[in-house]
Length: 154
Image: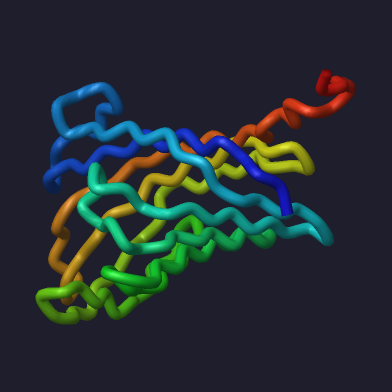
């Protein structure tokens, strides 16, 4: 498992609104996390911050083949599955209660390797097949350089 720097840019849009990644509804977060790559899959984990409104929650991504699974545990709990062209239902638990929702993934692009990489996901959210909005997020993962490598402390 490697220590990594994770940069997340995400935006939410009302139904019919074009997704723009630099508008007022865009959030950017840079945080530290953990990353593991091997055997054709990878695992990425980080703690949510107050900026996301999910403080006290750990978010974990498991990327394998054409499926990305996002699991949130803590103050907010849920498991979302992203698979291009597919709709997956999930139970989303919050401090205010739980609800069953669906997501349909329009874009799923992963470019992750041994030293990190990127992931782009665009999906719609619905409740009982009634569209609630479209979400877009981009995640960049970079290894944290080992500051002690090749250096001697006096």
